[in-house]
Image 1 (cartoon, rainbow, N blue to C red):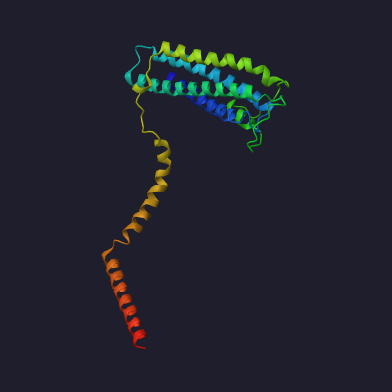
Image 2 (spheres, rainbow, N blue to C red):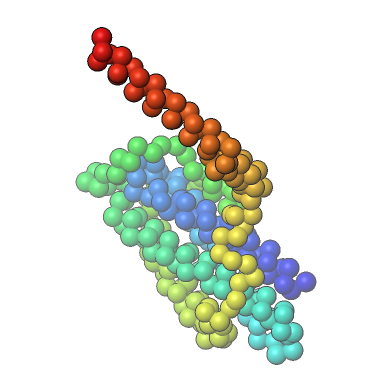
Length: 237
């Protein structure tokens, strides 16, 4: 039960972190709005809540000395995936802090970058927050007031990573994956590739057929003789 619960929390954290990463990419661009800054705040708060819950459960499981070897290996794999999510979240929060300070929404001397991208991001934020729709209730100067809070939260995430590494010592290079890198991508294309592979093998085998090669040789010889006779007739005439 503990492993399944950790997997569910990690899946939710992975989805929320990916949505936050997608939202951060639009900060400072032509699609940046007041609503986006509010969505960023709500998404990162959700990600931090999931990170604290996931980290607490994984820490308790990995510090249990009575844990079986296979169970420990599985929890260590979850720990490595969790550490990767935290690293990505911290980097994206730092990027959001830098871009938010560089491109305030209500400063006339700081125009946004005209990337050509337009449209809202409410669907992405609602997906991260597991909500059908998202209500925007921020004030006009929300983006400026949120920067100090974001800066404190970046430091808190960094402290969380350091604290977890002190409590649980799981070097990433010692954890073995259960499948090769990119195996989930290759498995989906294996069915289509097998049928196409059969056709390509047959097509490659065609030119190497001895009977076809002999027929091509005879045809080439007859063609050369015909060309030579045509030249001789032309000279005699």
